[in-house]
Length: 184
Image (tube, one colour):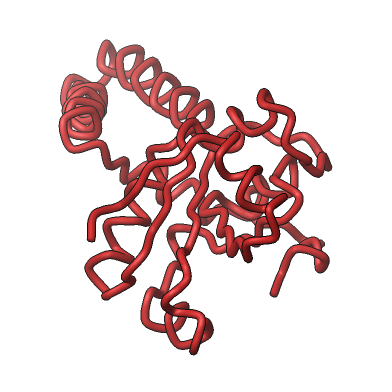
């Protein structure tokens, strides 16, 4: 069965109707700590283990698993992994947490953090600038901005970002005090 994309409004209607909604948020712990849908639990994409998640759900494997991220891209990647692992019913929340907050779903707001996407742009820009400046003194350093440009093109074409995955593992993107209320 393919992944079903649902709107934040549909998600809230299902929850209000009493349907059990198992919602996983695949963003980094720091992003989750900043803002998340009240009834979501954090399962970061870089630590997603579909087999373990399927085993945890046990008998409830026939119920849909709802997936959310910031705006939809990481959620789609998580759904691909979960689908390949045999999850029968997957629902990706269209527009992610941003759309849920805009639609008025209950969200928990915590410590502000810089988005992973913004961190990637800052890091890439910094490395390109440093490489360009240093290449005037060390001719071989032109490889740094050239490599960054190639990496950015690859990320755009494949919709996967190695730099984002590395930055997601950095200490400032890990929550030191994960919210217990949302873990199941």
